[in-house]
Image (cartoon, rainbow, N blue to C red; front, side, top):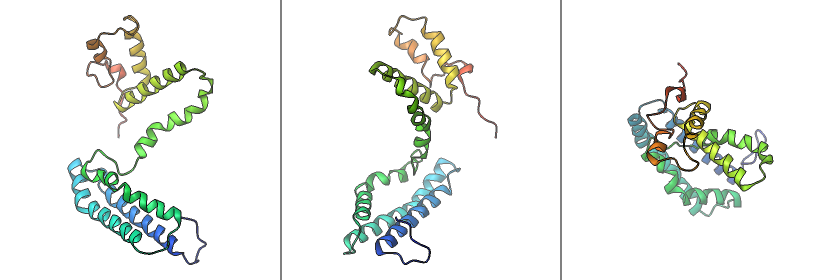
Length: 193
C-alpha cells in the first residue's frame, strides 16, 4: 500500500489494502497469544480462535474479487494470489509444528545470505558444492542443538580413520547430528533462563 499523507482520504484500493493488513494482523496477534503454550493449547487456539478469523478473511477476499470494485492491478494480483494459495496458507491451522510465518526459516538462512558476499573467491563448481555441503552440515548441527565447531572437529577426527568416500553405513549413522552416540563435547550448552 502506498503511503498516504496524514488526514488524506484513502482510495477504495487503499482502503481494501488497509483492511486486509488489519485482518492479517489480528490473525497473527490471535495466533501469538498461545505461542508459549503447550502444543495442544496452540492447536486448540488455532481451531477455536484463529480458524474463524482465517475463514472470514478468505470470505472477505472472495467477496472483494467477486464485486465489481475497480482494483489496481497489484492489489487484484495480491488478492487473487491469496485465494489461489488458500489451501497452503491454511495448513498451519492443522499442525503446531508449522509456523504462521517464515521468520524461523529467514533467521536460519540469514548468515548464509550474509556470507555470500565472501564467496566471490569460489571459482569452481566443486568449491561451490563443498561450501553448500559445509553450510548444510553446520545448519543441521545447529538444528539438532549441537555446537557446529565441536561437531566439525569431532567429524574430522573420526572420519580420517576411514578411506575416502568409504565409511560403512552403520558407522556413518553414528556421526549424524541426531545420533545419540555423539560425545558430549558436540552438544550445545543451553542458555540458562
